[in-house]
Image (cartoon, rainbow, N blue to C red; front, side, top):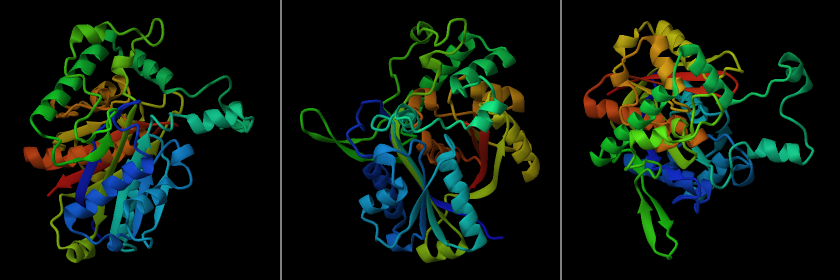
Length: 390
């Protein structure tokens, strides 16, 4: 079995709902990342043998194979194929797994794994909601409803279940949310995101043009007192909007090659894919699966959590990474060192490759060797990827 190397890793800076990136069509947004990946390596776009792109809400402007539309929008040759992947929030992390598997097998030498979500232009869950309103049926089949009677799968409910199980208070979650902002602010001011961010030209309200380079969701004036003042989402619960991931517009991508691809491009790799795992568990609690997926991945890889220098655990809700830390006896100082989705935003299908771009650049910046990425996914799924910085 061959190796899979990541030779370019980038993402757009996040845009708030209705914010700076809301005027950009998602195919164009993703296309900017595709162009940047080949530009950073000097690769001929024609050498890309497939584009695998994660996207969760595949409707409206993200329908009809958003991956292929992004390829056409990017100006890549028409000969470059593409396909769209939905593993919920792990969609573009799964894109990386598929790309790595393709080059490791030798079936392909050069593949782009990417992700995109314009949550301003295609609201979360809109394909299912609109279909239900149009009388086109519920995604939960009669057999599913028999198996899970009177249950509506809800990530918000799952987050509260985790808080209760692990004994987290609202104060615990608020403190973690504040930390996420503080780390994101520090990383931004120190220029730690500069190597990963792909600039996107936007048109402002006055008609002037500007390049979007800073994550719009970061509250640079965030205070713990202000976060504590945010109302609970559910009476008697622990989670607020401040301890939930931000709705976000964004795109991300990774250029993945094998040994033959390295020689063809003539570039040095940033990282090597060391291990990949995907697991499934309780679809009701839903968000706890990264704990068990990590344990399985480490066992299969013959590693201990202490072998991992940095972790990226998606901050879908604050209880998720907090429970992951507890469940894996992990070091909080190695977790999401540049902040996470509570501050930077969570562009659903774009988050997997986004987190990997951050993880790789942080490993190389700090001199770390191994990094682990995982995230909770709708349906009780979780991907885990371990990479080695080179």
